[in-house]
Image (cartoon, rainbow, N blue to C red; front, top):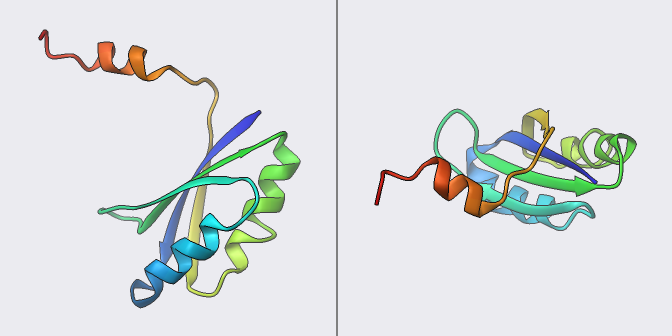
Amino acid sequence: MVTAIVFVKADVARIPEVAEQIAALDGVTEVYSVTGRVDLITMVRVRDHDAVAAVVADRLNKIPGVSDTETHIAFRAYSSHDLDAAFSLGD
């Protein structure tokens, strides 16, 4: 399983529609509307790297309103329990 985190810049007036179209793509598991330099963060989970290319380059990038993407491939996943412990403030 390959997990890719895709930062998406979109036409501001079309963010909800773009997010819905991205969320409907096979291989996309979540789409988040966020603040900051990008408009959407998309989680792609597929079998192999070729499938990442198919989702991002062949489909996501071609959605009207998507102006730019930046794709990050995850090396390792940590459980939410591990992340909670790592960021604990010593409760």
